[in-house]
Image 1: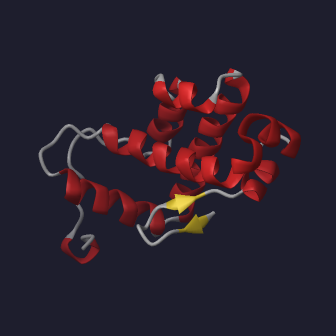
Image 2: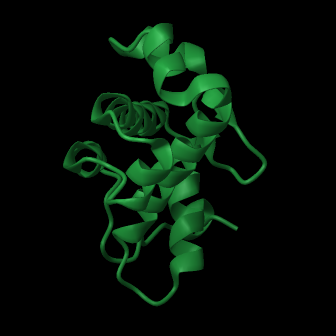
Length: 135
C-alpha cells in the first residue's frame, strides 16, 4: 500500500494479487486499462465507508484521529488493506459495470464487518490522549 498526501493508503495491483485469490486477468476483465485508477477509487471509497460510521458533529477531528490510528499501527493498516481488498473483491465478482456498482451501495456488508471486527468502526468520538491527538 502507498500512503498518499491526504494520509490515506491506496492499494496497488500487487497488494491485491498477493493478498487475495483475485488474478491479474480478473482485474483486467473488471477494470480494463484503468486498473490503477479504479483501485485508488475503491481505496478512497473504503475510507468513506469507515468515516460514515461516525454520527457526531466534529467529523474533521474524527477523520484525523482515524488516520492517525491507521497510520501508526501496522495491525490497523493490515485491516484497512483487508477491507479495501474486500471492496475490490465485491467489484470483481459483482459482474457489474463499475459506475453502476459504485452507484449502488457500492460495497458488501463484509467491508463494514472487517472494519468493525478490526476495531476501526467508531460511531462516537475517538478520545485520544493529548500526546496522541492528531493535528
